[in-house]
Image (tube, rainbow, N blue to C red; front, side):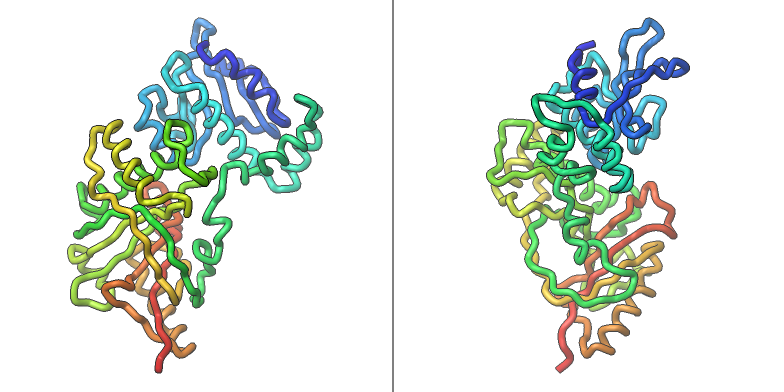
Length: 354
């Protein structure tokens, strides 16, 4: 196999065990009894695939970038990915993917169980205990990188009852458009593909020649959208053809406009696609009311009414203008989540009633 280092690399991780699942002909690498990686053997006993777990959005992106990365071989194709064992995926990238798979599976255990797994690991490497090695790079799921949803819960994980919040200026990559977002080939659906391509080009810049000053590893934040309709202060969900929007993904503060410009050029070169619609956007929302909406997008007016009733009782009123817009943050993948379980943060600008 091309990646001959893989067995030693994985067994050197805290608490990892290995077995052969004979009926599958897979060599499995497990943490706490759960598989996080496997070498899939062919009928001749030689490796054909390496299978591992990734966040769905990152897996989707990497499959587009490398023809040797495919949906999980005999696994859930949303979360698992397979790499051809004789392919051209760089060693450093495969190591990064294996690290993330390990952390994802370890992070799925309770904190108590994570500690048990680590404390029961007996191996010592390079003079460091496993506990010390884990501490060096953070524990459990934190190893996935800085996660804005978890670190800024006040912005991304509000309660399902309205609350008032002041939102600071944030930087985004953005694509503007109009029309019904549900139509096949819509400008909205195009915008999502453009944004994720640029978001992951920036995230993976550490693997290439572009060294962004102040870079730290992070989880790509969720998709968001600002929505409005011409000459209307409220959204009319019955007339989606009148929608105007700005689709956005938040950027870490270390990413500057010139980094976005570089990412557009890099993505265009690799994918042979036009990314001129993508822009760097600094946006300040200021004082807002927000609420977690659980359910179909078409049921949002119910939640919005609760938000407006709440602020009226608190002495505020909506402050929708051409610069202050209806804002949604999508915490669920609408392609894979039942409508009644969709989680969307809804945020509206407000002002004090004089």
